[in-house]
Length: 480
Image (cartoon, rainbow, N blue to C red):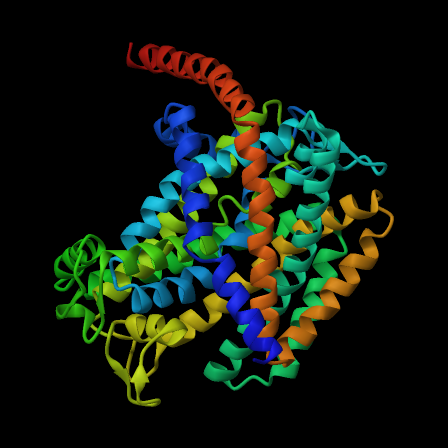
């Protein structure tokens, strides 16, 4: 057995059923302990996220606005998983995988709320006056046994650094180069050079530069993609009811079923559950602890208040963007069909492109393919930016100083060129393993501190009640 095969087997094991049960199980436990508050307050959280207040930096302490903290975290999560990951799940697990992706995201709301709340509560200020936080700092400060907390925190930081270079950088750069080369015949070396130059310019400016770009690019590209997806759904509106029916039928079918709009694909509830949960976790990163690192940079007066804002990242990422992709594929009629160019089933980016091209193909011009390729490029580049900050703060934690951060930024940017121009199967699997290993100490941390999470959530409920009462008074006055 070769080294690459060993790494692949380890990757399959660490992201197997046990890990997925732990991730969703932790979300279930926390959701029940918090009495479903993250679900009950989702409307409040969305309203707070879209308010003018979230874009201001006058109140509280921190480096960037609450909205910028969210969009920087979203920059790292909204990526190829929303385009390629959904398509992969629907081929491997059937269209019913989309339902399980959404179910896991519901519990992911609570997981993300918990990890982000703890990160803000236990963050610290470094020598440069910047905020430093995340699961590693939570473990360092909140665990009664400082030795255990220190070891878990250091391990989390190590795995985060490794993952940042792999799944957060090299594989993303490779996705960009591949998409542009396939669709527009752009040489991989040119793509790598442009990615590296842009990364150096943005990343060396630190969190304020990264968040400044993210708060513009992320909403624009997400809205653009969703609008295009809705156009595809309208174009295939006749198939949409059958597509939705197929999604729910195959999500809960004990026996392997298929036919209809899913072509040759057959799947059972276990396949749908496995691949739906796995792709959902990859997409929104709830439970991995990465978003918590960015949340800790927010200027805020309340850990729970910022946690509600960052929690909506799972909503936007999975419940909006992934759902649009999934419905577009399910209603397109290309799922389970053969790509004439390869003689194989459409899968991955090819499947999403084919689905969008069923509507966005004007006079022979494959607008759907162009859109998806540009979307992959923008999504993946924003992921590079978001993951740089995650890795940088983990790097800072390991060395206990910010003095080497600029070295990390430059090296991180240069590594993107390598990713764009090199075959990366082994790097993908290795960084995938590091990503999974981040999850373990983070889940331990959240479960150990679940009482603290619950207390903060219950106390903040008084603030929510007061804000609602104030809003009600204003509305009553307006009606008078």
